[in-house]
Amino acid sequence: MAKNMPLETFQNNLERNTRNYIDDLRVLVRRQPLNELLSLLSSFLWPNELAWEDLRRRTRGNEQTLTKIKVFIPFLAKFAINQSNDHVGTSNRNINDFYADLERSINLIIEIKDWLPYDLFDDPDYAFSAWQFVIANQQFPLQENPKNYLIRCLLFYKTIPAEINSQLNIAEAFQNIFGLSIERFWLLVIKTLQGYHGAWFPTNIYLGLNEPPYNITAEELTTYFNKISTDYTTFRTISIDQSVSLVGRSTQFYGFTPFDKFPVIRNGSQSLILSPYYLVKRLTHSVYFDLLHYFQVGDDLRNNPFSSEFGMIFQNYIGKQLSYIDDGSELIPEFEYDSDNKKFADWSLLYTNKLVLFEVKKNLLPNSIKFMMYKNELKESLEKGIIKGLRQCYNKINHSRNNISGLERFSNVEEFYPVVIIYDDTYLFNDNFIRTIIDETLSEEGIAFDKKWQIITTREIEDVVNICSAERSFISLLSEKLDSSDKLLIDWTQYLKSKNIDIGENALLRETFETEIELLNTNAAI
Image 1 (cartoon, rainbow, N blue to C red):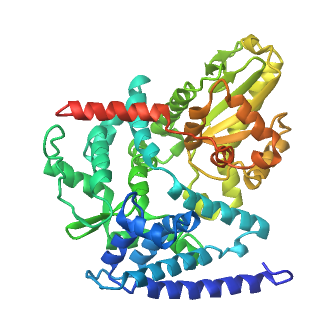
Image 2 (image 1 turned 120 degrees about the vertical axis):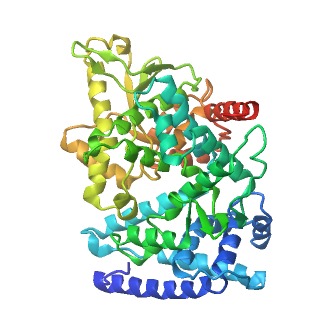
Image 3 (image 1 turned 90 degrees about the vertical axis):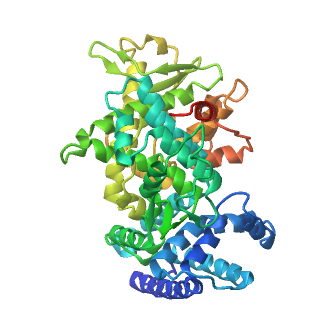
């Protein structure tokens, strides 16, 4: 924002520029038939595709440019579907012209994202930080390896519910929602990822799935694609319905995307999978909401039985991950103490004189926050999850220091480290922007920590546990991060990258995947 420029003038300039950018972009996406454009865009999002290699050659291997294109293609595809007609054909355009248009289109979207609804906030600085948060949490996930999402599904909705003797029949609920068992749906996603990508394909193609050992039927294949695909008309309707409450032209790109629920686009008898990310995400985050809706009774979401059950499932999952930390620490599950059966932290790591307390929170940020970051709603959401978890840590630390009955094992502990692990794969939660809101809220209650707290996402804990050893303990990684003013505020993913650590593949997820594949290959019927 230019110094001394009136806020209204600044906003009007941004809105005028954005309007011009969108007009230019609309011309670019209409230069060729929609089906051809989407096929070309999709081919860049799948590894080992010739189109991606060609793009790498044209950009001279510039990783920054390649990442930028990969991240923004889904936003461009959403815009193209909403702004184009359904004409099918071939333009016979020179591929060099297409690459030029692609680069121009991506640059336009990058400019559009800078439009900020300043009039919605009292504090322009907050508005800018909030918008950075919104953009980061829609761009960064598209850079991740989606395989972890795929395997989590089995643990969340099959393995762990069976291990904890879940009171809910999640397998039956899944079957009723999707018309397929968890195992059959998972198998079809695996095979879709292997053979249906990068171009339009006939929806009824089997790719050998109708043969042993899989024996997929025509009915199962139809049911599967009906559940994960939608046509252009429905895609546009969903986009409009979900965007009416959001302010700003940039919501034509950011904000809700129908790809979350329908990762496959259907046009007549042909289908297209834009990105592997959306397909595997459909198996985790989106299924969570499907099950939440399935088990809902009445209007009070606080009494949803699946919400409570998933909290136990997620806590158990984190325990499984933490059990792979082999650094000489003792992993302690939640236990009761004192005469009134208080509960200690969900999980703890005990070192000789140090204790890390983990509170596990399944709460997901609602769309109204992810897309617009209204301050009061953000604070309310943080209160339900992260702030509550930190408050619990604070109380348990005080109980330990005061030698409350049942906590004698911690009598030699000199330093306590509060950590909240969240289900939502959200970015920038350790940033000063979020930290200030949390610390101010806790300070009003008289809560302050000797050691700064940290937030770790599911994705990050999957990486962290993989690198911990006697030579590189979790407590040493945590201490180093807390003691550095720069490292304190960055995500754990960024922190690990700064240390040039080879993270490798998560052991629990790898073992789960190998076990399921072995079952699929040895059983004729699941």
